[in-house]
Length: 127
Figure (cartoon, rainbow, N blue to C red):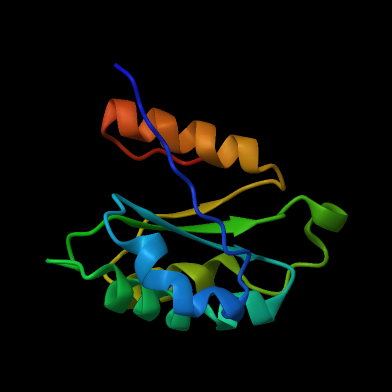
């Protein structure tokens, strides 16, 4: 089996909002990533989620696979964490029970894990 991944990373910058339709249309999954040590990155999740739904022109946004990733949990031994896992899970529940994972700071692990998910067709914790 071959997987073809095309990943568009807007790095959370609002200047890319106007390009959303071009980036998002035809997507098979949306991975929302925030820094657990920077509350402002968590605070913008509603906007990113809503904009993706609007600009991707989804037929059924409730069935579309979104994933929330809490990143950089290893920074400062976890002492700098501003967004609790409970708060992140509550946000996921409010958005239709999205899968939630916490990860260390490497993006390689994120995408390797997503590839395993794609191949296996199941979700598993990445912690």
